[in-house]
Length: 77
Image (cartoon, rainbow, N blue to C red):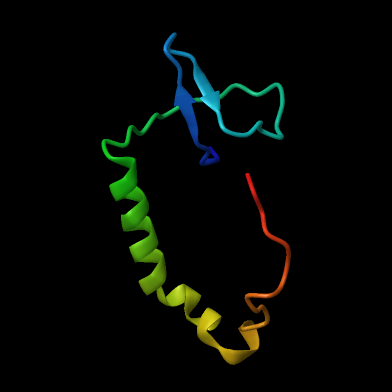
């Protein structure tokens, strides 16, 4: 069995709505729903874990520093 992590919301009618459509079609699935009690704390915990994860140490190397504050265009949502 393959696992895919996606995010979504359960609306006021109890219908699960995914944030983004899936690429797969015509498949039976099992759904496990993990409810966050405090999403802000969960995000902070995730970010703290990612900043101390040694898997991302390569991002501190000089050759990875290829962008500056003047690159790109502002994004306004």
